[in-house]
Image (cartoon, rainbow over all chains, first blue to last red; front, side, top):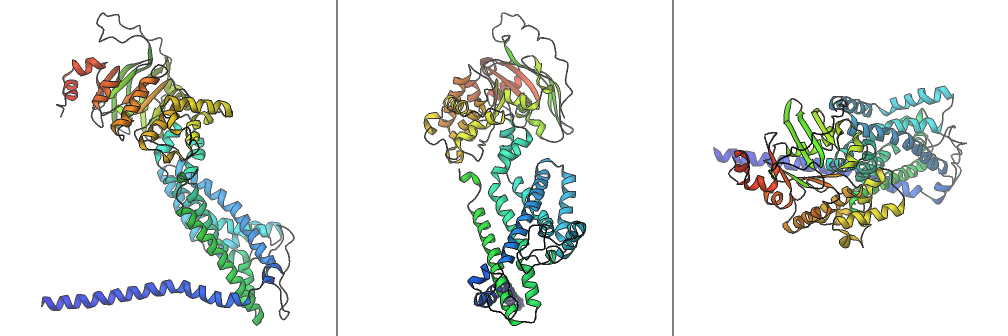
Length: 284
Length: 275
């Protein structure tokens, strides 16, 4: 009787172990499948011209996405300039000033914002910037991506500031520092490596967003004439080219996908390295 | 959280003339607490504490954990205000002026504090000591450099760190870090220095160094130290206060407290018969 039960248990145990192990392998292999597929297709279509030339019409050889690479850079720069200061200062308020009840309300609201579908954020950008200015623009794209960065910026700031020991705050205040001085000269510097890497991960997260840009930055086959004009970005280029019927455009889309993914991975890995180097206390 | 500004209480009554040399404190009082009550929420942590802290003397507070000695110490530079839901009642006179009504950053510049656990900022040794000067608006390089050297010398740390001033403070040993924190506190030239069990995490040699330096700086600042180490109180302090359950049981000359206390509770505690 007891033998039977233990046999059954052992069989179930082995079964569950292999099942969960298999699922782990599947989950991890998705990333490597994507990486490998992009590598094969992307590198084949990648050329020096891809980084230096404007797109050419389908059928002509050569041509690249220089405008989209620069465009993505410009839109992401705007997003950082909008999302990071806003989210950072809100995070400072949440961690250092707010009382408990109010903080949990803010936190809940921010989490809700994080859950808003990116296409809705795109429509918000459209309503806030495109409609009043009567123009698709880099600015509108930056606003949309900036809004997308806010929730994570708030929460990472809050988390890293909370991890700074209170004894440092007391030490600074005991020397006659005001609360604001304490925060900006002791608490934030103590958390700076975490804050920087958190913001970089945040940037990497929105770098590939497509939907918010469709309604805002729109796209452009040429160099954008400034911040208030429609602008090409890598994700939107991929979207447009992948939907087109021509095979040569598909190849360009693969190349763009590869470049975008490399960019995101580089930001990600750099951010992790900064965290691994530890708190700034270990450096000068 | 602060009590509204109290009318400045008129000059302290002159010290009671008395021929007993142990029971009367000289009239050079630096800090003067009058009926201090302190509350964490509805819990009363201090009951009617009144005492005179003498200028340029070392005053120690002893008592079992949770007796209120640290709370009282933190009331004297208003560190407790950073905690939510706390309330203080009574008067706390610094040179005759109620510090509970002063600007809090001004109070903390005059009444410095060193904590139980050393808390160097994640900055260089130099920047740690210079911090207090800089936040108080002193940024001229020559003045800051001079003050950093002077403070580190007073804290008996200069010779050990003078060649690595720009190394991170975290690279120092525990005892050195605590002396750095003392140097940092001294740099703003506080009139009173509060120390909350500054040696509890240090070995006897590091402790001795800190005790020596406290003796050294006694002539320029008034020192109040909370300690669990009764030998330390006996060695260091001119005056000792014994706290129990939020009350100041006895406050007198250190020798009197340790050799011939008036209260039975004090005697039980200092002789180790407590509890």
